[in-house]
Amino acid sequence: MTLIGFNLGFAALLGIALGRSGLLDNMKGDFTDWIRYSIGIVLFGIMSLVGSIASIQYEGAMLNVRDGGPIYGGLWFGPIIGIGAAIIGSVYRFSLGGATVIPCCLATIIAGVVSGIIWYFYREKITVVIATLIAVGLSIVHIVLLILLTPNNFGWYLVSETPTGIGILILVPLSVLIFSWCYQRSKQAVAKKQ
Image (cartoon, rainbow, N blue to C red; front, side, top):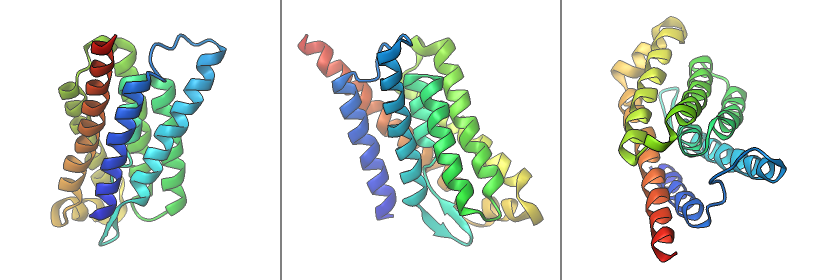
């Protein structure tokens, strides 16, 4: 549980740092922005990696917040960062193997893609509450993929007989909530000073 706490703390610090610095805000796609996109992909890719590494092992499953980095990267900074982070997180998850490798990798990619698409169409309407609700929805998608794509009904066993399903439904949205709240509050604090 200490590792999950470390990950959530890291999400808070990253949210504060990006909110105060504005490093990834207002990018238009020119050359200097591509440097910032690369920084964003690395930062949120690291969040996804740390989300996998800082996990709780339980009966062959990993309770983790891997999908958090691609979700808040995509929701607050767009599809390039969300998808880039998702690819990093998925490649690392794939390297770990196991019975849940396919649904977990796919769920992470979907998290980055869907979050980036939502940013593209609705970026002005995203709030901390909406970001958290989107994370709940994407966590449900993750659980459904686990049930459908894990062999020998192992996914159903994980969801129905272990804390895996509840863990996904709580930990990933909590990670998104913490990052989003810290990011928004820090941005508001900077705006008040100007």
